[in-house]
Image (cartoon, rainbow, N blue to C red; front, top):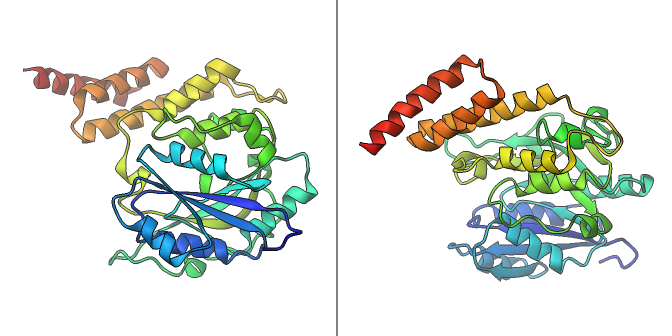
Length: 317
């Protein structure tokens, strides 16, 4: 390790990802930056992923814990991190070359910014479930200069994050000082804890978005998006943030109230439809009612509210 370079701590929560974690770690080791510590927190996996990491990557700092969710695993990593900068990488995803160097270079040039994220691309398997070489997975990954930001997604972005979480955890790097201000991830949230964290961070600093793609999100049946959720975490996180901070970013830029209502309507409808497809009529009905609260004239919400009410009544018989 280069003793003169600023240390970056990479926090990697892992749960039953033995098949993928080696590629994730290799993508960190391949970074052209000389001072990185990798912290893998195994969240009570039932596979042999932790043993695999211990055997094949002795340079990794490995911690084992009982299963408690991604927030608890990331919090272990935050407590153990020694670096002046913190980066996150999910154990089934990968970074592309140059990510850490590009972010560190940007931080050096912009001391007023305490959090950076980057572009990313979805990584799909072929018909046999195999994933292509990460460097060949996307076209034009290096076509955007590494220091160019997306101006629309950079700055005081709290009000923009209320309309959608475009900050993906695997691309994030933060100054340790920002982590000290924001605190730990909310362990009561099984999903959406990253969204909540970035909303909290956006109250403390400008967040800049490097436009270049520097990471790949691996889509597979075990991912959180594929599994779905039994609780509307996104709506919960948004409503809690608005009740605390309102609709305006610290610089005064604000979200229109109608836009927030439309956002919440769509979230509740989508969650309700997910419940409906899975046969959970009672939960679906509750979500469709919340959807109608935001947009009382939405015909589809009325239709599915009625259908789910019938299903709910049948379940009681």
